[in-house]
Length: 530
Image (tube, rainbow, N blue to C red; front, side):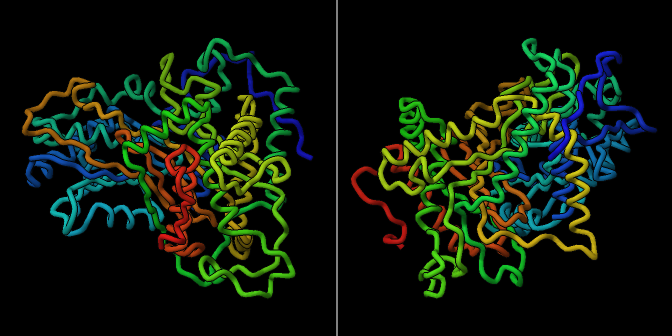
């Protein structure tokens, strides 16, 4: 039984101006909560876009370092590095030469490849630091850029960073290089600290920075939050539906994949309209589609059937299993549901505002494999209730803040010889991250007043996120780009066969179409089509 967590408030001490403190020539702060867990997970266990422009490759080469440096001034988080697994550091540039060195080290050009190939290569490596790669002279497809950076202090703002860099490429004066645009006034503590990312824990611990209605928690509030955390951890011991791991995963090679399935714009608009009228959230509807597809495609195998041959399609998982008690659904809760995570009161934004969360849907209370629209809607309603049960209170934030160092140490110990990582479960639990809308179609240049010649305009034509995911699960990432709803499936080939994941993805898409009324006249089955 865990002990009650400590009171996070220090009401007798003066409020710190910022988490970031000057250490030598660098600004430094500790990583806290989910930040610390993500950094350790990355160590032991990004986004790309295509562009359309009339600018020549030579012009883009001349501009890319200055554009990247200016992007850092707008989003200082890209200048943050991690000298240790527990701390973040930001180096102030005192001279144009220092700024040029940073830009040339972190922003490079590649030719004779494709944007997607560069993305996959970056995703399959353990990143040593941030990199922006401008892809010119591609062997196929459009020119583009690939941003690879740690997830520790960044979440969905990666789209804004990419958007800013592309807009800065449109500025003719960027051809003067970093020396021509260097601004010493912008590289001071006074200018940078208010825009460096703060932790969700810091906002929570200072109520007036997070909103006027936040009150100080009582000891009972904190104990209730700890009990909630323990309840979410107990779900791992319960039998759940899931995606079976490949039977030979122990000897298969690692290879990260990111596959995308899209809905047509007309389908997307119809789906949004239906869900709004039905009062069902997009996340719950898609989770219901995932749950139903997984439960139907990978049914429970009773001990009496374990010796039988496995299905002709799908992993050959013939080990006897416990009958699923329900669906253990993994997702990330966004801090904005509790606090103001935007920049305010002289403090920077919370660029990593997520808290790992989960929901449990009992098989006794709702059908986990419905085949009708009404059944899917009922499942979505049950998931919506379950998702919100454990994330009603902001007091889960200090729970992660206090437990993170212990969990990070345990993670490090488990992956340090002579220890070895624990064996993976037999099935990957359903995992969904809802990334929202990446673009509303408005031109970033017009929105912020960057005006170059029309012939210099650089326009983003596509955007895709992904990363290095080595967990034994298929992570579904739901998002929309310019009104086109789509989802990515991020997974490691060590655990899951590529063809099998694509088959599952199409079944999920079919379930979603059925839920929103786009497939009422046929019993859609990807197996029949394939």
